[in-house]
Image (cartoon, rainbow, N blue to C red; front, side, top):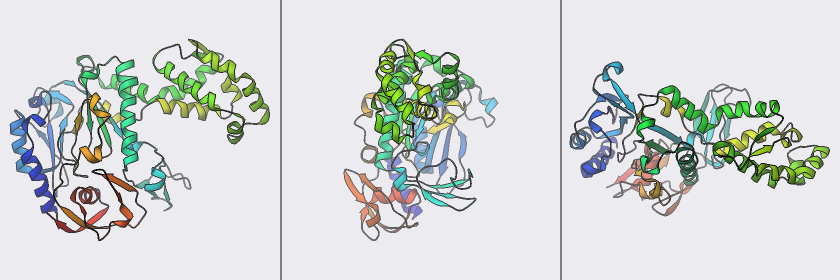
Length: 411
């Protein structure tokens, strides 16, 4: 089966055009290839141009292809210090695996390796024994990947373009081919910043320190902070709080467990607080009334306006990232490069399908409930596909992800 799938990948790379290999300063990047039936990456590869890289892809037919975010003087040197780093693209990774979407309650399983509890949904640790050693059986559905797209818009519109002043023309968005998107920033000033500065950007975008210190700041400053008539993070946060406070009525406050006295006090002052939030400097003393709920509410509101990016990808100065227009070895989907304006209409499970000729019959390795999935504008009820002939792209997606075995392949 691996040989047949490898031949499908080979045909794809044979058809790949040189102009589709869009890597800036390609001859100064390190490349890495993960071949079929291999347990490791072959790193420290370098190529003079896109033609020589394409020849290597045809020759090796890789399962995965990566290149360095960094530009080096000598990219093929095996010691990192000997490569002589020049600068590094600023890259953000939005992976739906790290995001607690509602659909995970339906299609994700987790197993505690300590107490063996099995449940559905998304957890950081076992809710019985508290163990962090969790084995996750996740799935990426259409709802997941659409949520990831919305996070990209939030990252670009609110943080990169508005707060950091980066032009959208300097941004390349890449569908990873599996669980999310990579956002590449080609801005000369940001390429030169070090790992510590990148970590500060990550902290700002994720709101990490803000969650830790904001409530204490309010207490020390008599619950005064910037409102909607301010800029950047504080503007978006106060807008979010205004929206959420406006929704709080007696029924919702009672459901949250607030006592009757505090419910009445809050509702009496609600309009005053809403008006105050529209100013540059606002009164946040409603958080005192909402105690002990206020910290959880505040953290939720901050989470809603921030973006859960994988900090390791942004901070690592020697990071390898997927090659645009290569195939993802866990889905057989194309790693699609997009401009900001192309993102809105982009449908991963339609536009990223690269292998279309053929069909297969499959059986699931693990018997559990699977979600519906829509590919090439057709919806498939996964719990009903066993023994039936399905399109090759759906079979490859499920097989390479480890969900099924392919019993018959028709090419």
